[in-house]
Image (tube, rainbow, N blue to C red; front, side, top):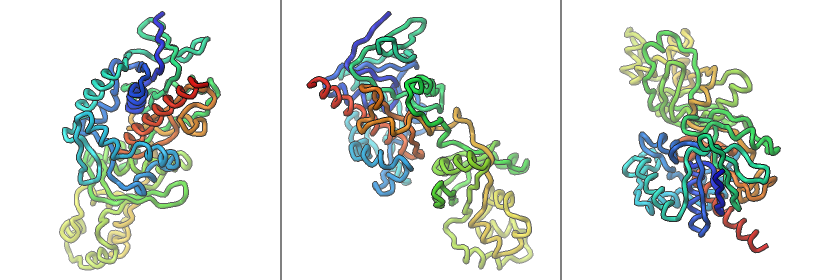
Length: 413
């Protein structure tokens, strides 16, 4: 039975785990990283296929609320590793970044693979060892980490360990939630895993589905009411799918919409089809309609056509289409009823996980000293747009520093 004795063992080779490995190895510790997939950073590589959105350039007063109820934790974590720090870290790997028109931050080359290769070279230079195809199965009787590697049992007895195993989205990349019963067996509180940054189901008419599935709906306002009763608003775009809706603007509101469906069985997403035009101006233009058809008039007078016009006809009562004031109000506030959530396996990320109250300020599990947790396996969520990755990187930095500090304290008694 192979037995490893590093100073630090990290289970999970995603952004949080690899960043913690870099911090610990940079402090002179012997670090081994174990992952049950063949290669590290698989989810990061998959997410970066169309351009790796590392972080966002928003100021802190807008950035931090993106973490919802976990904002107090991230206020501390991002103070220790800011978006500018992340860009500086990437530059140290030879990866220059730029701020896009939306404020999102990307590598100039728009590739995750280039960053990952440079990162792995740095980790190798620091002496970090990577062990693929090692599935964590819990602990041995004497407290060592237990793994299965092919048909072989493998153990590791580090001085400190970090679990960074992800949530339960994109399970083919390694995030399958298999760790939940292992931690619950220790008595650790785990909030049920749920999809986050996912699509929703809408009972489209056959006409809309057949004509517009796959088409984007651009430059619209979206809003939803969150748990506190506050209406959250944003402007963006989404895609009509066979089953419902997907896309960045929808993902940004996925938490309140998911929670409403869980509580009521349905949720309302409100659209503003012309967010740059006041309702009074809309009503004034609509009163000018002559004998031409509504479709022709909306296209000529308001540039309202294609999928946006189809959505208006799908959800506006027929009586309102002939009333300029009522139609103007409906264009500005079009309720779309969502009847279901797309499966967690199809979600970009997941919510739920180990409750934050189980951890101390170093991200160490209170009931098991020397065991740290980080990344998506903790109970937090954030929208896409760089917030997720920034959170995972910052957690990895904090966990790495926490392990170094804890080992130094235990070494001095």
